[in-house]
Amino acid sequence: MPWMIRLAGALPAGTIQTLASTITACSPGQWGDVRLQVDQAVPQPPLRSLVRAMVTVWEQQAAGVKPGEVALMLRTAAATAQSVRAEQTVELVWTGPLVTGPAMRRTDQALLQVINAAQQSLLIVSFAVYKIPAIATAIVQAAERGAMIRICVEAPEPSGQKMAYDTVKALGAEVARRAAIYVWPSDKRKTDEHGKAGVLHAKCAVADSRLLFISSANLTDNAMTLNMELGTLIGGGVAPGIVVAQFEQLIAADILKKVTAP
Image 1 (cartoon, one colour):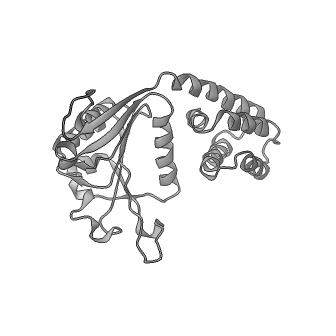
Image 2 (image 1 turned 135 degrees about the vertical axis):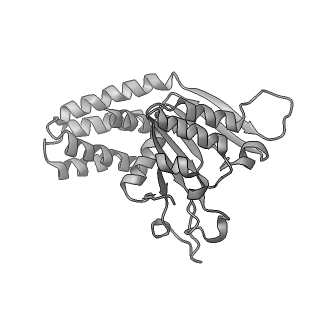
Image 3 (image 1 turned 90 degrees about the vertical axis):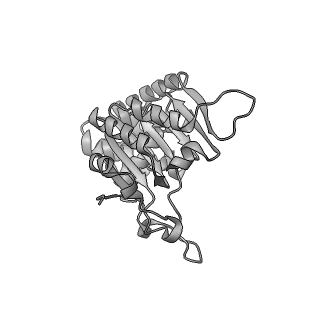
C-alpha cells in the first residue's frame, strides 16, 4: 500500500482513473500484457517508470492479488492522497542578510527539525559536506532512535577537481558507521560533447516520508551561517513520499551505489 500511495500522489487524477480502468481489464498473471497496457495508459516517461515499479512489486510480492483489486487499491490510494494534500504545510527557509519583511526559518533550524523528526527513516542528499558537527550529532541521534539513515553525496572522484575534500570522510566516523552512504558513479553519468559529466547537485532531507526540506544549501558550515540560501520546508502532503520514492528507484536501479566509508 505505501507504493500505491506514492504512485497516486505522483500521477494526475485523470491518469489514475485511466490506469485503474486499464489494470481492471488485464488478465491475471499475464505480466507482459500488464506492462504493455500500463505503458500505453501512462505516456509520460518519468511517471511510467513509477507505474512499472508498482507492477514489479505487484508481481514479486502480491502476485495472487487480482487486477480488479489492484485497481481498487489504486483508486483508494488516490482518494487518500487527495485528502493528504489538503493537510500540507509549506514554510520558506532563509539564511542570509536580514531585511524587513515576513520572518523565515533559518536553514540550520529547518534541517535539524527534519533530522530530529525522523523516527523510521531519514534521507539526506547533498553535493558538499564540510564542518557540520551539530548536524552530524543529530543524524547519529536519529539512528540511535531506530531510524534508517540513507545519505547521498557527491563523490570527489567523478567530479574531478570540483571537490576539495572527501565528502564521505567529512560525514564523520560516527555517521558513516550508522548510515548507508550512496554516490553517483562516473560510469552512470551522462557527459556532454567535451566529456564533462553531470554532478549530484540536489540538496534535500526527508523524515519518515512526511517532512521534506528542499534547499540551495549544502551540508556545510558556510551554507548554514554565511551564505545566502533559500529553501522550502514541506510538511505532509505527497511531496515527501515522492522524493523518497525517486531516490529509492535510483538506488534500486544501481544508479546510486552504496559505498564503504573509510
